[in-house]
Image 1 (cartoon, rainbow, N blue to C red):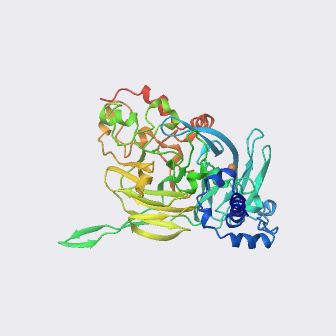
Image 2 (image 1 turned 45 degrees about the vertical axis):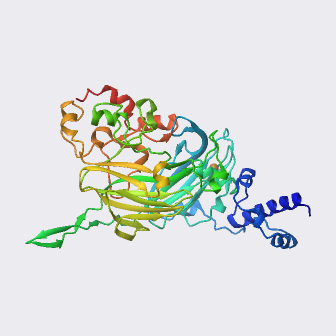
Image 3 (image 1 turned 90 degrees about the horizontal axis):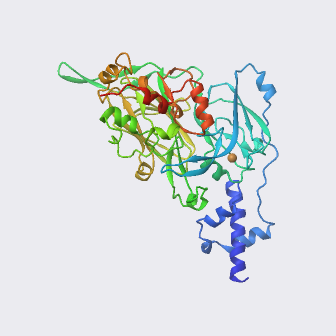
Amino acid sequence: MNKRLSMLFTITAVAVLGATLFGSTYTQTQMNGQSIDLSKMDVNVIDQIHQMGGLQLVMPEAFAVTDCGALSSSGRNVVDFNLTGESVKLPIMGGKTYNAMTFSGQVPGPTLRVTQGDVVKMTLTIPASEVTGHGNDMHASQMSAGNFDSINPGESKTYCYVANVAGTFKYHCSGVHLIGMDQHVLSGMYGIAIVDPLDGYNKLMVEKTAVNNGKVTLDRQFYDPDALEFQLQYNQLYLTPDGNYDAGAMFMHHNTATVVNGMQFGYVPNGVHNLLIKGDANKNIFVAQPWNGLDLKQYQSQLLFVENNQHVRLFVENHGNEPVFFHIVGEILDRVTQGNRVQAQGTETWLLGGSQGMIADVVFDEPGVYVAVNHDYAAIYTGAASVFVAGDPFGLNPRLVSAGVIPAPVPSYAYALGNPSDAVPPMGMNSIKHPAVNVHGLYTDDVASAKIADGALALWDVVPTLPPIP
Ligand SMILES: [Cu+2]
């Protein structure tokens, strides 16, 4: 065999092996971008595979079948979850756009929230105008995604399952018959399902100490299960300069951006916060303020506001290709749970591998600024830094009251500015309602308009009407 033919033969064999190993078939871009060193492949093994008739992806026929009719009349609560598959252009940090693939025009897709034991009835619709088919795999189910397969443009398909296990679970596009799954997921087709425990969440214990009669003693504090809740979903973007998916970069884990809820540095201060705190929109109060300015509308970065001594529940998911070392600068995670079982108490950092979720419970005791990071320095510097502001660390209450923005001092700035809509999950078991929500997220304008119609604050309209704050 001449050298060129041999190389082609090897590439074909790698594609077949890839299909076998990953249940997928490499696309041409992935072949070009693959990082396997072909020169080190054992061609004899490939010969043997070919002598055996070759390998190809053959899925067994007998997938477990879900009967929506039977599940709907089983005495369980049925929750409809409707998604559409839409390819759209969305912004990236720095002013460019990328070719995103989305569930329902937003990245991440809408959050599903159910109670353990509910039937989820998920319907995926692909508009006739969509450029490609899409699939769906919900990790909260325990049915193979092969059963659902993928759907062509102009079609719709429904899938039912019982959410038997409590926790935070990824859902994602499964590509077209599993082909291109990596491209679809890393371009934006991911989201979470929150399954609340059937009997509700447990009260939270926080380790403290006290001094009694000159002696240091344990002073454990207990918090009600009701909590203020946020969702933080980690992923990466791998893009060419034109904003297309770059499979070669993906294979080498060379990301273009680390994103939280779809955006780099999406929860850091912007000009409004500069103005409130420094009296000058151009005086940055944080090192990175890339989504800065009212003109960015739903894309301007927003802060996460919490009260002191409030039980805060974080639903965290790693959708990406790289680990998340979840850490909050200035805090210890008071509890980490998965599947409603405590995994850790009083841990500084918790590791989430790819496609892994958790619930982290935290109480922010002192007024201040706390930064939630992926404690991988490359991830921090490429976007995984999200700022929580607890209480009134900037002493704004008197100024906000005298300017008439709020009638009386408030326990967090959420009462004046709201919390970002893409970080606020739907209400569920033991949820404390956010005082207000502002429109923030990697949303199409249609999605942003729908959020406003639902009562979320459009800060870019509201803030200019506020009286000047001295
Ligand atoms: Cu897709």
